[in-house]
Amino acid sequence: MGRKKGVKRLSEEFYSNCGKILNAALGVESNLEFFISNFFCYPQDSKTFLFNDLMVSGLGFGVKKDLFNSIVKKVLLFENTKVFVVRKLTKEQKEEDKKNLKELSELNKDIEFVQKIRNFVAHRERYFIDSKFILQSKKSTKYLYDNVEINEKIVKEIQEKSASSAKRIYSFLTKVQSKKTPFFDPGW
Image (cartoon, rainbow, N blue to C red; front, side):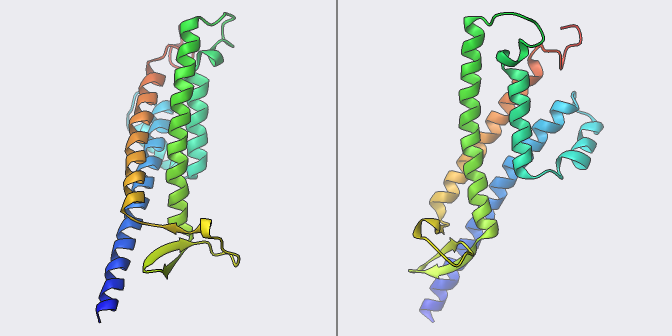
């Protein structure tokens, strides 16, 4: 009976951790939706929510991430706005572009990690091996590096990356909305 209770407890922990991972990934996806909707329907009003419901929420996670990246790069980087006005970039503008690209790259790494683990949880099979539950590929040929143990450590890492992603996404939204460009200022 003791072994059964131990396995049951491990199973409950496993599913609890899987739920936390899916919830954190959903948070990242919701933040991307918020960014996209508020970019296209600014200032926020009922049209913003309608746009999100009809257009943005139906897109896949990867498409939302790509759209977010495209918006940030097209609007925020001085390098891309010089198309509208022939000018040379100042040293400060080049530095700001470098800083924004670095921040965007770090954000993308966090989002990709969250997305990768979320996909493991959603699309892998659960096995009980060596007194722990792991997620394994459904493929016939299995490799040790394909196994993922879902534990508190990975859950904490996902939650930290999700929270960090939310802050950065909102930071980019603020920067994009406050930037004077032809997208937001017709008199530019």
